[in-house]
Picture 1 (spheres, helix red, strand yellow):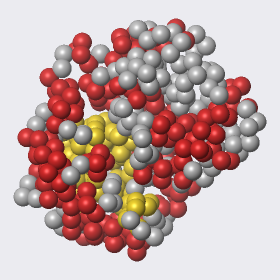
Picture 2 (cartoon, helix red, strand yellow):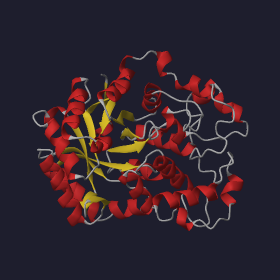
Picture 3 (cartoon, helix red, strand yellow):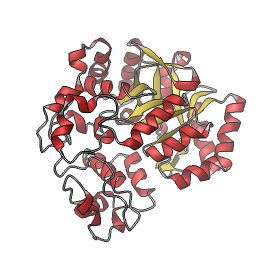
Picture 4 (cartoon, helix red, strand yellow):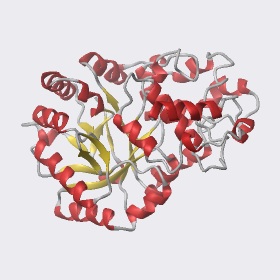
Length: 380
């Protein structure tokens, strides 16, 4: 296992990390087995955004006795209310949930105190200028958290955080589908190897974000590296070709400022599929050639979250709604975090007026109006 420095935190984190979300689906012994196997293979960073008391206890008991070798991302604002996950900004609820995390993890500190799930710029300013960030600072001053981070899917919010001087690292979604932008009218351009050199195939907004993080020494840990599993299946990949876990991980780790890719593990076999990256050949890591061989119509009808549809007269972040809709469609039961992200948008599919101005701007012919209706059906 190779290790990278996580920006200005100075922490040495494994290139492959453990995203704890899917551990909720397993019993206590299975959680223990997966976590201990991760540890044996050199993985030393784990993220627990989940507020479910059982999975917290299962993880905490699995790392008990080896707490010092784990770098833990614990979230401020992920709470458990009325038997379910709830994002909260009420400091009473936030403090109660964070104290619960410490107790269930049998520890008196969390390495990376993550301001949980900030996807709108208005909320970012409210949190950073108010009592929420003051609470995080007090925790850091006491040593209860060692560093302050933030989790977001929105590159605008991520940029604000990286430039703030107050946020030391980010948990951010990085993968080829989320990053691509069709800046050329000729789609053939996007299936050439040259497209993937430098920042030619990444949205200017995201390319700028990665540059700013690198310049400001704000490290990134990656979520959604596999696109919720979508990129591993040719049937659901927007490229109409399947990538391997190794290729997805390599893509993320080649972005500036990225230190670790946190993946969800359902089994030790999934751990092996990810850590295979550490011994993979250049050929096995090569995602560019795979994408270059994709059908030329690969993007047709598929949202690649490029943002050409904006602005929406109703204020909908169409790319974000489509992204959440796609992630939700990957599961028989929509994950709580995806449902919460959708509900917390200031405007969503229910607000679509059907004007279709976005569809006239979409380079891939996505039927956005229908997608907004689908999103509302899924999340209602």
